[in-house]
Length: 339
Image 1 (cartoon, helix red, strand yellow):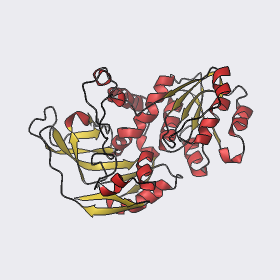
Image 2 (spheres, one colour):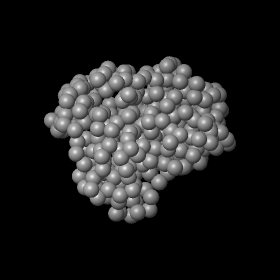
Image 3 (cartoon, helix red, strand yellow):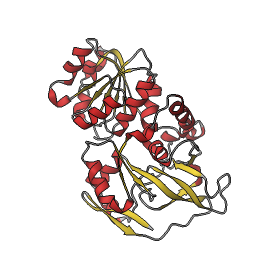
Image 4 (cartoon, helix red, strand yellow):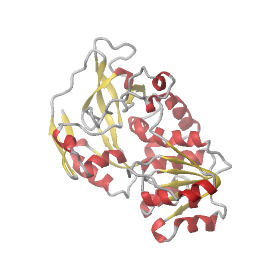
């Protein structure tokens, strides 16, 4: 089969690799759509020795059909349409048993990180990692749901975003754009923040009432010119330290912020802003798979087209160009289609 492999800094190649075979509790998924996530760009931009030497297939946003099942697999059949939950978990700890697999205390290396991922024609998957793709949703919708749709929806549900809120969306990459779609459907007034003009244009298309360019001047001043008291709630998707530093200036007193983006290993915010304004901050890590049916129903009810966040499609054979495009940080989502 054809598969991608990272071979150096910002270097990725298409190569031939043996088709995977299922273990007793595995299935083989024939890929139909697989998208590129911002976290896929971390090893692409700054690969570790293990990323280059381990013969690993990148990618963790798979959607496809089951091509083969292992001998002990029950409840799944060849031809079933599936989405893969990329975080590999134990299924036995308190968090797994109470519907919070995303914070499993015994998590193993995720697909595309320590186990072969989705940027290939076929993928070996443990059966507990499968989620059904509804018949009324496309494979591209499934690839978006595999990671980033849930990653955007889950923190908004924890923030309890509603029509009472001004919601600042900090960072308008794919997660921020999806948060704009969802937050608009929840009734909030969205203020999108990103230095990329094309991404601000996409946010406006997806429902943002206002968009701000942080490179045009102090972004808090820009927001307060529109909303003197500040935003009620904020979702930070960029991971930028500069974006972290102004959270306390963007939010009104008693405001709340969800921290999603992983662009930096450090998080710093002026303590006086946090304390004196009594701001509530929380981190959020992808989404629990127990929420996926709720998200699909929300998408249906509000007639949201998840695939609209995709701006660039490529065949797998053009993997290097696909990653180069995603690396510009000026587009929507980039997706491989296996037609």
